[in-house]
Length: 513
Image 1 (cartoon, rainbow, N blue to C red):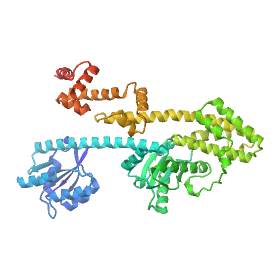
Image 2: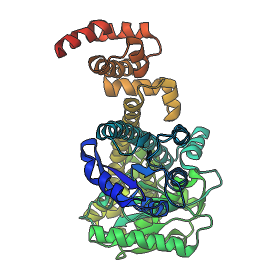
Image 3: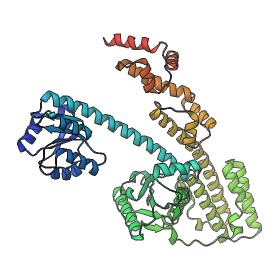
Image 4: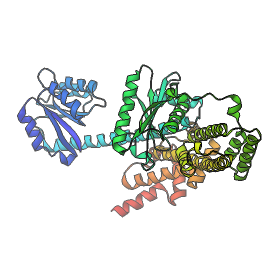
């Protein structure tokens, strides 16, 4: 139900309007009443009505002054209807300048107010639907933007989109907070984003369902950041019923740093989640031992390349080669374990960059083989690495296909929302940061139709609905559903439906009769 608030300095008028008007019939309910403009301002902030019905002559502050004050205080403001005991054109003209939706004379006529309420209800519902559609569209774009950033994708167009959608400049200082349940039995997506103080930044969910917050950290005190993390931990722990770890990255600059900040939180998660019973952990508190250039390149360089290619036999051959080299150099088992640990972290980063969940691989490996420190001979360690590489390669292949599907899903969803607009494949490709020819191929693969055929089909389905239910002209319907040329619309309609729009309209008109 829509909410209406009534303002009049006469109690008997308030009672009469509340009891004698059939508000429910028009989809309204009276949420508050006020005898003065001051009282009305206080109640409006509390109840946020959809419609304000106010007398024009109020003590201290007039009804028109109240409307002006409400517009300043509330965003978006409600709709307004003026009540007056005077049939005065000057009053009406002033009310119209304030963009009120109606001007009713006392005593109020039942039919007149019901008709006006019906019109206002339709306006509010259309505005709400439009606003929700706009929010849905924006959420799709923001989700796509953050997903691309988590993958490390970047371009000047992406930077411009970040500025427009999120208000982020290249020099905006950021930190990343990530929450994760310390339990193998609790679904990580069950916590959602409840408890996250979204006024500090942008709430997101990673591919594993973990909730995160991208924080504007410039000017944010350490105490405020820790308070936000404590709130997240408390709410998520209570909701999931298990301990929750909250990881806080270092600081970065601009949305371009998101992937690195997010990866830092995952590194903290990987090091802490099996050892702690929840808590708040900072990336900057970690002091990993420095690795020499020789170690970083290590014995697994070819292994990494083969895992990216995904060919099992070549992966196995590369692993055998790596362990043969370490054996010939008499690398001690502790050093070999350190290299394998670095290999694990490299795989985790690769999985994260592709919006995957490293725990899917690492938890399964540790469950089967135990902790890395327990693999105290080359044979056991080689079996572990061989399995780790094969599982990671298969998962990366799966993620590539999944990410490709996610992107085209977002594009199709966007087209379904915006088909009435002027849409072109090249513009969509730029908006979603893809090659237009490749996007066209994905679109056909996913929908079974070319982009233009899919778009025209959506428009024609919408046109059929309008032809059956409205008295609009054919040319007006063409424009409403996205065709700029009426003849082109008629031609496409006949090709799809088998008859012209006018014949289709008349046929359904006769059915209704």
